[in-house]
Image 1: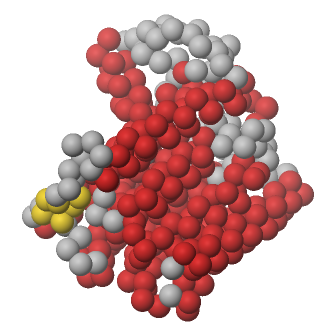
Image 2: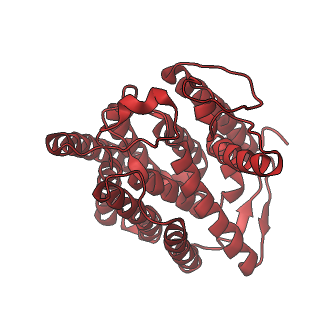
Image 3: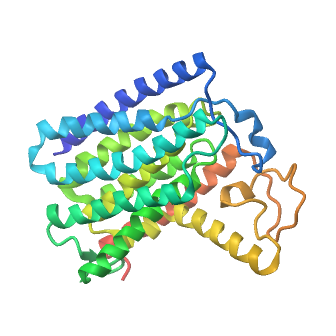
Length: 335
């Protein structure tokens, strides 16, 4: 199984590396790139025009792994079908969103209602399949305990659907600095690797290889953005991993940065509606640490004005620490 995982990772890494370079070349040669939102930090204006939809390379890397595992490790085909749906289903939604944004020449793709409806459809189908393909998927592992808890089917559907949609959109919110979403997804995947057991190891190894191949071009200064294609695909994969490992309750720790980014948006919106003031310069959280140039409204938290690589590094360190706490909780070292 370890050899299978290594092969899966290497194949995925090479395929993603090649596809990433191909996407960069094709988009650069046609003058196609990312549109930067006007309300974002001014320090991001230079990123306009950077090739995007790098998530297609991630999907290619993951897809090559799943194809390899279909023939090389047929005993894991039940999991494979779930990963196909969770990764490519949500990735397809992101791809359509990115494509519409490019075609319309502005940073707006699918409508919020259309995006939510599509995500609900893929999420419901994924949860339904989990009951058909996994033994006792609703017997969930509790962090900091050696026990599990079985929850009713209806509650399981609601919880798992919430988990899937939350992580998909949380990864998307986190995708705002070079290497941040990809680096955080890598850490989360490594944490889940620790609790996946032999059956899940090759699938996660394939994801890790794909992320590494993409990060090659995505760390500061990024030559390629993942777009919604990549963010939704990574979120879908991580959500599916949580389902297959029965580790839904571990996502707040294994995905700690994603939770913080999402909470920062929720808190910002609620506080603004209640008081007319802001907590952060701009949400999600990572933007608050950047330069305040061009931002002339008030906010509660103090200025930081860190450089982008420093923000990315420090947030990833915090994310890594939380993932480590989650692993302690799984192995019962803290009880």
